[in-house]
Image (cartoon, rainbow, N blue to C red):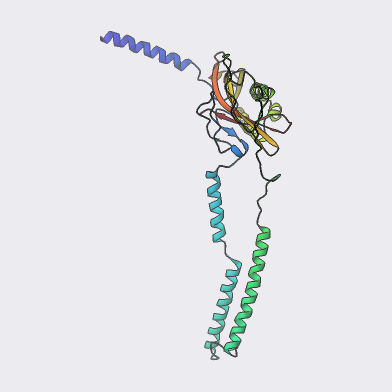
Length: 328
């Protein structure tokens, strides 16, 4: 290859690179910011079941009010170490009495009256020690009693979180938009799950996908609180406050569900959970509040995302968004 050809190819590569630099980067500042946030009840530490939409599962939680075992273990170890290092009142009492007896004996020897002065006989010394033992034992039992009264007791609201599983005789119909995408193919056979959902549940999930993104784009925190759990509403409020601090605003529009399927649905006590894998398209831009200049994203080019959204509701209540996990 001649030097002229190399030079021409180098100019072409430079032009392409320059054009790519001018194209705004795809935004990751949509609701959740591309991070795993929220909780899945008792299944927060377990990965959602893989689906056709998200065959590799989901990312583990980066922001969650439910502590992981790795986070809880150091705290438990520190508490145990602190308890072991805490001085025992009974032990201190026995050490103090022993030191007192030793000091009294030494004082008697120095004064010329003998080490066992004041104790008429060996039997008297044994009786004295027996009295000390009884008093120390009573104090030890009293200390243990009051310590147990003061220690916090583990409590469970509404008793154990029992999961009720059942298999319907005939599977309930499912929403076409949530199973098998929009390709018109046959829906996959229903998997055995602990909670059976109706078609209107899947329609509600699809509406929440749009409504949550719309409320986030408008920074309408009242609308977000109506559709999110308090934990998720707090995370979203933090994200919006961080954008405002930077002088930015996150705009989301044209949200369209492309494919979705159910990963898990289960019941915990009086709460019902459902984790749904969704692949959707949206237009997402991060812009400056004062100038409107796009910092990330594109005003007319849609991007795609695949996430697992977990919803929760009380029995007979409305679904709310409980967690967002990007697909792994």
